[in-house]
Image (cartoon, rainbow over all chains, first blue to last red; front, top):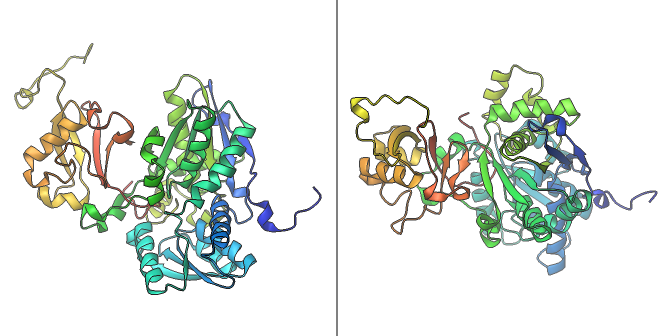
Length: 315
Length: 117
């Protein structure tokens, strides 16, 4: 093909590259799927397009309508790009403590930013977007945490691409946010080979949960419950901020310039590789490092960078 | 414990032969009110379930907060042995050793806020 008709046609079909030089176990290969290669810069381009096109199909989204969505960054950026190309207006509820580049990119694509309290993290953004959507029934609220088009994008795109490129996969390791990637890819891979193991990597939730007054204020994404997430996952493990940054740096040794969540996922893959005798681990590098340069993650003093990242949303 | 010399001191004599050990339990803010404001306490057991039972024995007002009356983990609570969510290990039957740290956290949406480590 000589050229593509639209930038939207460039979403997906991301490359899988071997990063086994970082594997702590010589009998375990590690392959990284570089989602930063998507035109909007992250894996979230996939669900942005999928959610918008599903909503167009079922009639919940009409020409020129305004959308509202909670996002700590990447979904917002992907949606902002898709909405710009398709002529929708977009309002993003964004926690105050995301990196400056995430905010700037939303502005590049013309999204309006509504700020939610930083200390409430993504929970606060979800809550506020829900409240605004309720006050404005004229807005379309696609709600990535509860939209089946989110895991579907991975079941129909990311998963089949991994299977096409590497049928030897034994373990799939990815970050857990909305849970869409793990549910969609996981279900697809397990249908092809039930022995494939799914590892979910979480950032430390830390002081963000200090705002909760009651355990019943907790939150589980509806898509996680609807898709029997706890039956599907095989392991869920937390990776700390410092370790995430260390592995984000190590990824550059093999030429991978990923965001800080990639370091967390790579750290999880290394733990996974150490815990098995042999296998092929596929990881998701959800975005590139560009949006995190202001954090000094690669070049700054590790203690100082870790301390700074503790106050920034990077997942 | 095989191959390891274990010195039993007077405050450890209550350790049962079934492998009950004292472990550090880290509490989220929402539970600290039940433990005189402490963020970290000690509780004993050979499994996560026993440790949580011991925790409730020490701090009775925590009853029903982490483990429901029917004996399962509260829906919005995640319990970790070191870094691993015990729901994906052996749940409440997950074994503990004295070097393990048990962390109790409320379930929240993805994306991190100001983090402790």
